[in-house]
Length: 460
Ligand code: HEM
Image 1 (tube, rainbow, N blue to C red):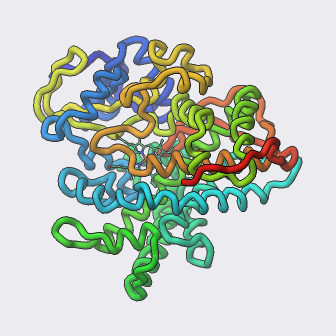
Image 2: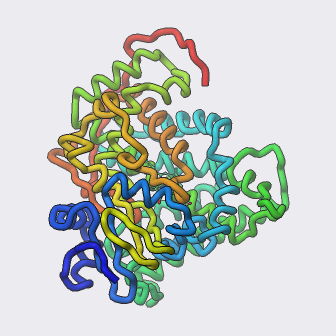
Image 3: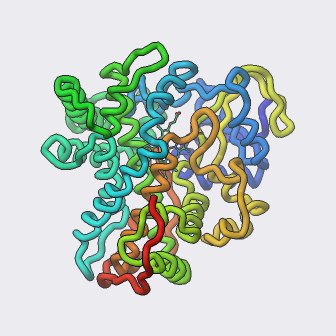
């Protein structure tokens, strides 16, 4: 089978570069081999064809699944954490069934319920930071997004079980973020429990503790059914597929874990990056504050959501260092022609969100943070794709955007923050997401009053 060009270095060298700094590796390959190239990371697995051309991205994301599928078995890397029944691990009709059951809590009317939760949780978390005392911004944004997703999923983030679960989730994600953990995911032979000092074993034990709590919660909900509850777990328990079947306990556990993990770490990282850029570039902060202040005190969430400059800042944050650097893999089922190459069945394709967002021809000066580019022109869904697309497009897209905007609005309107960390912070693989390569420290300088209140006229 002929594949697009790519590095000829031994697989183990390619795998190490992939684990240590995939962004740099992809950039180097794009320079040498162009917008479609092949990586060989494992001699027992098919090579990976990496794509960063928008037309090719469109073809990959819109081709009928009979020709190009997005199989869950290629996401095995997530299975130890999310389980076999997670929407991420399953394929075909089963995958569609889970998406249909999972999507309603993330649509229109439901989203409004989350606005208050996001604003309240952000206020609580940010009020804990004292004036003049530096703190790690990612810890703050993680606390916000974990509490918000706990509240959205379970309808509560207080009480002993919720607190224990939050603690386990934080520890689990912290461990999953290390390079060692990423390496273990890519080398399944090392995924063994070697006793109490063992890294993988410790991670599994934490996961078992979290599972115990999740199953307890599911059992209690089944015993005390309450049709007035509107949290995601209640909606999922009440949902029926086309055959009238509900989700099993195992399916529920895996989807809860998926939503807690996918819905927490991603948005926390995006928020941390946004706060970094806003405070690194005084002109960005000034324009944003001007726009936010024009809404007065306690602005309506629907109006905040539609603010053009805030939207541009959030979009640019997810462009420059996309939290997910790749789409999930797609597999060729019938021969296709892509970017001048004839690809055979079995070829595995990955859309490089990172490389697409770094294209000079679409985003002039791609390494510069410039929200204005999103005010000056519209980008197609294949030039700008932080949430992927097609059959596996992110389920939490609207939720993440709402959370980013409302949390930023709340933080910026109430506190004068300052960046303590000096110099450039670069992206680095942090477990499942692309995060900052070192802690970003910030400090609260003072409380902030909204400067020019005007009357509110709109509602959500
Ligand atoms: C800034 C925040 C986020 C980013 C950048 C992001 C990005 C992505 C990307 C790139 C994909 C893969 C899409 C593809 O392959 O075409 C994805 C899938 C997914 N995301 Fe997100 N996501 C975010 C937040 C969330 C949130 C808040 C949730 C849920 C509460 C969520 C749940 C999911 C799920 C369940 C999938 C798997 C969909 C499937 O396999 O069918 N994500 N996300």
